[in-house]
Length: 334
Image (tube, helix red, strand yellow):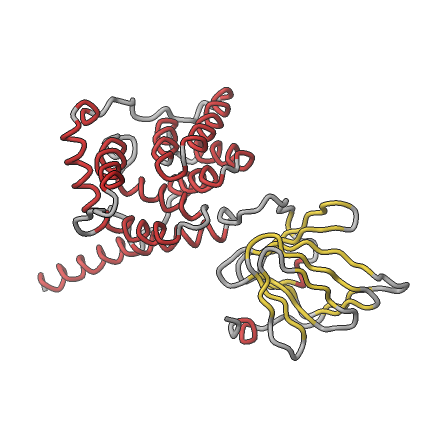
């Protein structure tokens, strides 16, 4: 009986670890890191306020934005710190200063900083890592990034990797580094489930939607969509529609008018009845003929934005909404 109880406790403990869920604090850190990496200062300011409301300390944000200079460059790091400084001009009573900052001892001992960097990089990589192709970068990584920077005590190693994964998720052209740090985040103390949840959350909340076009408000025609979409009027007659991943509109027909679709961000699909679907990426333009049954929407793993307007509009023009695009039809798209 004692052995059975011990096994049950072990299983329950394992289940708790494996079902680790993102906290509001971790979401706050991730949102700020992702927007900082994109240089989106407009969205970063309210994200900083929300992060502070959710328990991220002022000194933790300073540490996160400082660390990320190594991944995004000094200009974006300094800009993010500038946003934080601006937000603190109206500091709220519930915002915490956090642990007092202290100068790491490794900063005064290059040998110790390098040794710490070797240890941290080995743990993150899961094995000794040597970049012999470029000794300069190998030294910078060990001595500075994983030595000097990781010597700070404001963020745990697990939190540092949440910040790094979130930042890299907001950048283009860094797929190898993102993949490495997703595994590194696990090696540094996060569960695989947490890392997967983090990436899905950033995607679902739109933080990884790199776009200068307005997202707008919830689409008033949402009853004709599967999933959430948003609508913003850009100018008279020109609208931007934003689709969350997997969101698509119903089959529909434009009578006596041509609809023009211009993809401006993300990745999506357009399909006419009885024809193969067409992938839409930024720059794709489609003129939907009048009287043609069709649908359009986001890919499974990407937000999607397109501009839309009508041309060749005749008297009596209208839209006819039809049945939803089923999961069976949608899931066949590759």
